[in-house]
Length: 394
Image (cartoon, rainbow, N blue to C red; front, top):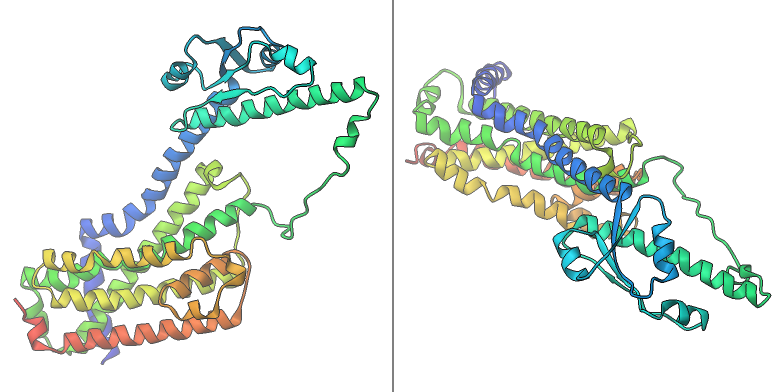
């Protein structure tokens, strides 16, 4: 392998890829825009629903006894109480967000110190209804405490007897954006793994099966440069396109966090230590190289662009499976064995780094295995590229 020859092929392939609008759209533009679009729409939806319920909580009430609870609800700010004739229908049709059925003898039962059964009616298919149900439940709880306080006071008992102790919460982490960090630990490994797999895909198909289909592979093989120079030139071009796709995706996610902070749990920013960013970056590049080599090998084997797509499409599910498999794992108590499983180990290390955990053993094991995968993938690509039966398979 000659470095100058590899660079010549690399320059040629990378220029061709950047001239191809389809590659630019699939590899760069879509990863950059997809997250702002998804989370922008999601954030607007959540913000709209929240604002609508908070500014005017519409409660349908069935209360034939004109109870004190009904009067209490009407006295609350930003609450509209509507007398309902068919509470289930009103909730289902969205006329009210949540319904409350109050027994006719409510006040008598309260005065006689009896327990009263209230019934709330909600629509679990409506986000507004679920939010309203929580708000109504909090109001009823507040009214209930007032009733209990009144009962105790009338008997000469200090209401504080019901709260013998109070608790305060102190978090171990002093950093802001705890929920944001949790969300990122779920999303970032999934995103990085998926784009490490899918980022090189379009370029690999184009530089392998695409060249076969266009009839431009044979002329390349007749040039003075060796077959290994061609392989590594294509391989590095594919890796670069994959890494650009990952960077575009991360940039899109960061923009999403700015324009839709509510989706990520608040307005607090999230920053990572430089070593964590470096390690995650190297992991992603190495994984992109692994999948770039595998995808180029299969693309060279395929007879046509369409056949290569058929073979390579299932690859995207591999990254998803590994990331989703680690979703529910408690990162502080992970078995060492899991760091020997391909892709799962990378996902777990990323989750550790996002949560501020630096475990040298876990990082070392993961890097050793990824270097093994990369070496094996490149060796496989070299083997496939050296076989005449594969290159000229039509």
